[in-house]
Image 1: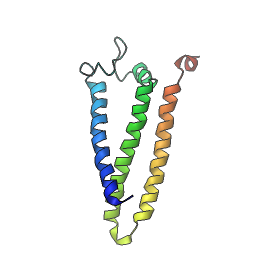
Image 2: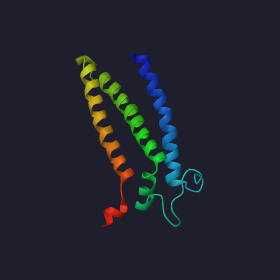
Image 3: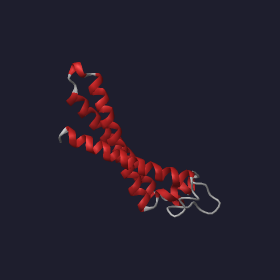
Length: 129
């Protein structure tokens, strides 16, 4: 892709991060205002293990978590790539830096998606036995 396309992706992922992070902060810290999105079990807190597990087992939250992970990694690693390329400009390491960060991002995404998947399919009753 052209560099201008990547900058557009950077801008759009930044906007998505504002939306997703704002929603996350609302659900986690402003529960009364965001009750239409999700409400913890009666008497529970958003950060209690039962609430975390309950959210993680819902398909909508699973999709949002994996999407949030992808958008955050893409935005952050592309920004890091640009900083490193500019800082190390005299060595012309554009391609190796890009490939290294792409590999790191793929690994981090795989691990994060796996952890999210394990929460989604976690059977609390079987784990308690």
